[in-house]
Amino acid sequence: MSIISLVIAISIGAPPQLSDNRNLLQRFEKAGIQIQGRDPFDGTGLCGASLPVRVPRDVYYVSLPVRGFTDDHLRLLGRFPHLIQVRCQRPVTEVEHELIELNVPTGAWLLYDVRLDTGDLKQRRSFRRGYRLVDEDVNGDGIIDEEDGEILDATNVE
Image (cartoon, rainbow, N blue to C red):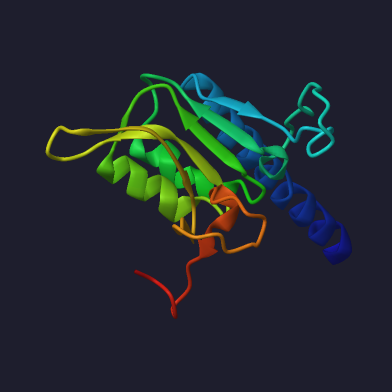
């Protein structure tokens, strides 16, 4: 009987993890947050439909709506390990920007405006989480662009 009890206990314990993943994705969908999977043609120059999202590790792109998302949603971005881009349809506050930066992987692109506490707007900015843009050609391609970004670590933090 103890083996049967153990099997039942394990099977009862397994579904919450699956339902937790579904609940996470459903929370985002209820808030009107668009989530998309990986682009199978990424880097090829071709366009194609994003792959479907079934679990958090399938999420590669998040698009935040004008209304409906909270700070809790921003904290949950950390549950998407393969996230490469976060967009927002409205300017985010400095606090929201910091929350997003804390919860997305290094290298993820953050595409939105930031409304400063002073009320000023940093327009059409794109940020690459964990990188600092430099003002010189670092990679030797003759062009100063986002590819010349420098990863931030404990030795080169501004």
